[in-house]
Amino acid sequence: MSERHVIALAGGTGDLGRYIHEELVKDDSYTVALLTRKTSPPPSTLPHTTVHTTDYTHSSILQILNATKATALISTIRCDHVDFLEPHKALVQACLDSKSCKRFIPSEWAGDIESFPAIPRFYAETRGPLREYLKSIPKNDLQWTLFNLGWFMEYFIPAGKSYMKLLPGEFPFDLEKCTYAVRGGGDVLQSCTFGRDVGRAVAVLLGVDEWEPVTYVSSEWYTMNEAAAKLEKFYGRTFSRTHRSLEEINAALAAAEKDPSTDPLELAQIEQWEVSGATACPREKTLRQREKYFSSLKFVTIDEMLKMGKEMDHV
Image (cartoon, rainbow, N blue to C red; front, side, top):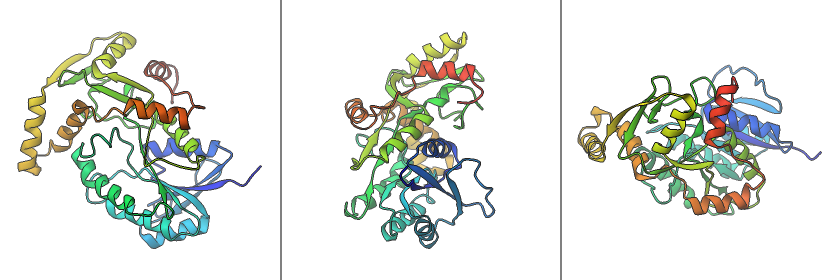
């Protein structure tokens, strides 16, 4: 068997990071160098893994990359505001200065960032500057891609059934309370992907020689109204509905622009993300990339996810 490539994983103890970690070490091609801020991190329970403490400064990351001989660095670090850019620029610079790590996947994990680069606004404020920084780097110095997937499909199953933490208030369905917040008319196209399928797709993509600047996966395209019908049929319950008009969403955004301390700002931005269609990965490009990169994978559908969530303790 050929020697395993070392993949450095920042944020690998979080929701998506755990899926990516598990899928990478299942592949005979990879081991994982897990980056963590914890001063005394416990050893990983997964095989083919080393754990490394870092403060996410350039020197700290560079030392880890060189010591492990990592060939790629993936970030799932989610910080929505001022704390995002500095550590990610340090990750990029460490890759550039390292002896072996010349591939990078930053923390995007969103929707159609090409058609809607400024939605949600907190992504434009954080990911936007990093995207421009990456574009300024010669391709021969660092290969990178922005990986996107729509909503995480785990939001359709009860809490505790997956690694993904539910987003009460942000995602329009609350399974515990049987509620559905209809934003706009609920008929704008969305897309979603199972977190573990994202991990599988990342593992496959690491074996591809050339990356495109933006990579998409989507298990399924649907409207929130269509999802509501699926959920009500599957769970045998009628979800009570509240309604949030486009005018109300726009008014909340405008009010927060004038006074950020009012802070339904992020919720209003998430609502805008949903009703604008920015959550839906572009179908034509996504299907083309599925055929190009991910034809070996079978992506879980919403119906399959609902069944898994009912039958299994954890998915």
